[in-house]
Image (cartoon, rainbow, N blue to C red):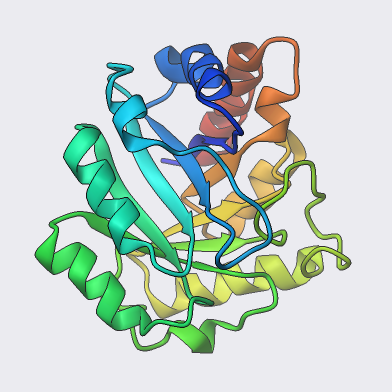
Length: 226
């Protein structure tokens, strides 16, 4: 099944709750973009204690664009009961295998690795067969409203599609998520190359009716997989 995952990149608790409430009854999973300024030049709001108090049934995955993700992961484990998966970046200056191994084996969470558009798959060969999910970035992390396939902000569309195809060939059972600039028109080609999850921000939340936009994309995803 191809899953559309709303992605929250927010600046305040008010914005977080507003966007969450708009989609929580129409999806199983929401991604939270976590930027603390240490790995990429931007910051977001991701307070675990406040999120835990919102009492939602939706599951969360964290996209951790942070140099030291473990304290954030542990805080979310403590306060957010529906927190299921932590995605760390291959570009952090810590050993990827040690970090993902700790999250999966010691904390008991699902774990993923995110790979920037310009970063080759070879950078994560050591963990590719141990992680639960690979998140392929199709834009540079940390900013909204970027365009898929814009080489000024990432890689060409063909390069992104080829990276998905190559990753799928390496491991048939791997969950492959694509994040950045996803539109309705991209759902079919991304699914065809092997994507399982598509993270969507602007195409959902920069509309007058986020729930309707999400449901439209979900309908397309269902038709693609039939």
